[in-house]
Image (cartoon, rainbow, N blue to C red):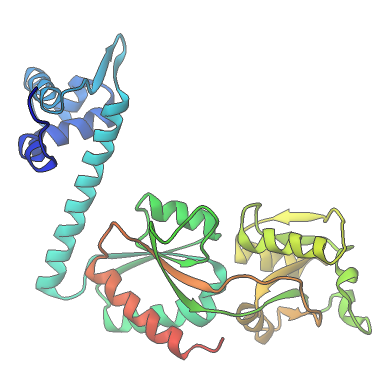
Length: 314
């Protein structure tokens, strides 16, 4: 029995053209279209696929009447080929950045609570230093942002680890801790009341983040622990803009990080309710993927974030 080939030996036999074909086939599910996308003939693509299957020793695609579907082994190699292309694109961006200063793209995912004290000031400083980096910011709940991070759609996340994520997959670094507060419009009837208790809040409609968001889960658990077993009237949104608009136009209540609430209070839009919430939300963390190197643009931003976090008021 022949000795199994090592990973190095197998990779030496798998050519780049074969990986490109596997990625195109996984996308097109048609050999002719995949071949055309790569600028080769269909017979040449057939030979490349056969050579790849011979190299790994298992069928990679099943030929059907209406196209081709990857086998379970094929799906694994298609994902590998796709990541191979992403990694090469990142490598090219890094080489370009090293030659011409920080350029390229920075993709940041963030929870709303990181904006006033951390992300906003850090981005302002970063863009002054590196105006040629194109920056995109996505704001959502931590569970949504971490899904984007897993798929490589953002470079880093400012949020909170969830139960599904562990530090053997993610590099997790605490940056900012702050309390959560209840807010309402500046002329809310509750603010005319002398003394507000937690029980006074549950009869009012609420704006809360969608189920699965750490803030929402911990708030509902905190109410139960306080003996308030009530069904809240909830409007769900993760958008800070939508939350603020709804608060201004109604008697709804919402939860915000203290710094974000203070920002809107300074603008005269909202006011913090003088009641302590049964809510302990974990600090905001910087999270990146352990198995993926950050680009020079992202590394530069991380350094600015750390400097801001050191000087931020908890």
